[in-house]
Length: 579
Image (tube, rainbow, N blue to C red):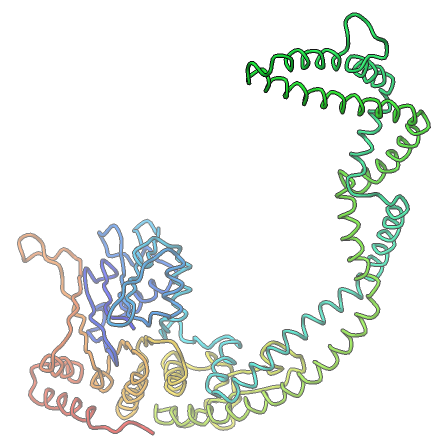
């Protein structure tokens, strides 16, 4: 709820703080004092269009701030945090500050939780925080969706359970239907894709590439292209290690062996030379191994002639063709082929899948029709109850002949909410045609209709604050008392703020706020500047009696008026609430 509302330089209000609280708060004052600016300020905080003309004359800008206390998990708190704002912990709940400023140049700025935010964020928050019924914007239930949702909330847990199961099945039905439509509409494209994949896989399977084969063949081709140079190098290296002809220079193995024998002859005189001789023996063994490997290498080169090179190049050409078509290398070609096989299996299974989807869609639709009929039955039952209760409220609100008609019609089309079209209609009197809310009723009458609906829906509606601007327009006497009673009844469930000119309504308030206007004087204290400002005051019991007396007779000091005012207050405390 709104704990406090602060207004600066808006209309005739210079600087005012409205301390609100739970229950019913009323704002009263003389005509032109600026009562409606309270509703305007709330509208700004809900993201409504800003108007530079609302800025007080001579001021650079106007602003409105609201301090709200909400449950920690409230959607508005979560949205504010998403927007970068902060919410402070307070008495087991969370406090959130909303602010809006409008410059004299028409520029507007919004703040959520102490951080600048788009005005659209205020509008999002407002949907779950405050409902305003003003003379220019009466109907929050103006959309068919809002009306259907209101009826569903009134219907309660029974309908909610049926609707939840229906919506889960509806989601699966729509998904299956979409897949079926895709399979049918893309049948030719999918057939062409299957044929293309089949041809590609046959080509790859015909070549039968092996992992890493392109790189291994590349190395072998380079080797065979330079076979003569390799043979000469291997033979020369072998000759240097083990010479076929004995010459004076000697080969490496002979020289190492000679060095080893020289050291072995004196090894008994020095262990260091003995160790060196052992190491030379190891070198000799290693040289012999290398020489053997070089001999085998030369023999292998003799067996790999031009025929093998031609075979390798032919194979490499086949692999290169696959690489050009499908992937940068053979390993990725094999990966692409594996993925293509899975996709081909899916495409080749279309006919089976279509049959399964057709059966599933038909079965789900039949079940949805049954559940939709149950939803329609529950809605129709709830519509009668809601209509009856709201119509009874209208009778007490001086609209005795008016009836709220809730029309539930079978559209024949399955949708997420069922197959019903729901419409709230007002029948002003018996025999008259029922018309959509907002058509054929005055602003005051429409305010009373909305009050009646809100009173009945209050227990199931999540919005914590309601604002009514002159809901009592055009009524008086007993009807005014009944309006006050209904507002007090609504305030048992939610916070209610009412701008009123009727003492019968104001008498029911938990908090009574008075707006007074004064003419601004010049420096001499006598000359009028032509400007008017307003002050806001929370009234105590004695001040409430004086204000109600003023509203009753225009004479707050009249003893008879004060006595009448006190009587209104006493009656409001004793008056039983309607059933």
